[in-house]
Length: 228
Image (cartoon, rainbow, N blue to C red; front, side, top):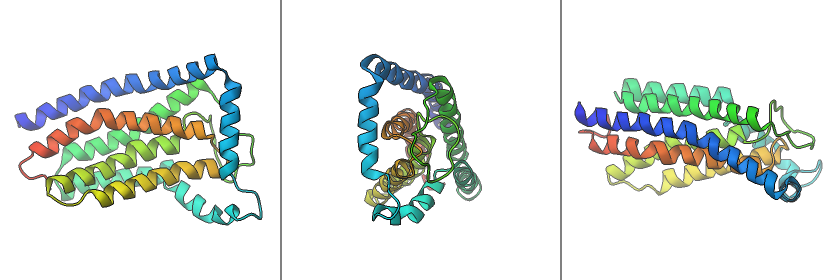
């Protein structure tokens, strides 16, 4: 009982720090961009976006169905279903309440922190023709943030279990990295986010993982049966 409660207490502390630090860092990024000058950043964003955003009739435009499918994986309702299904599986099948709760917390934290930072910075979305529906402000990308902070957590759990059991970690790492990358690129491709929006979402999600994964790894490693 003691071995389980100590990592959980540490996990709660790490969450508290992350909830404070992530918005602070994103706000600092916005403030630095304002000091340096919005125009240089905007020109860089537009230049990078022009490499990805498709024009009707060109080769890139043929990827639109795939981009719409990929971006759906980062939507609120799909990630909500993924969070509930994963949490139930760990809670009931694996009898691992710690991981089940961690999954739900990561899902909720990513979306709530994203909404909070967007409301504070209020960056408008690109003026390009949006190839999918998008509401609210632009920075940071919620899809990129949930991809890194939530899906990244799921693949990290898979990786941790494989490592503890002596299995290869290459497949979960590569699969997770590819999914995260594609979701972020899909938002730029569809014209609903600047590249810097996606980068900000990735940074926020990565910070969340940096804070929450160490106590989770310690809990799984110290468990008598990591598979349960």
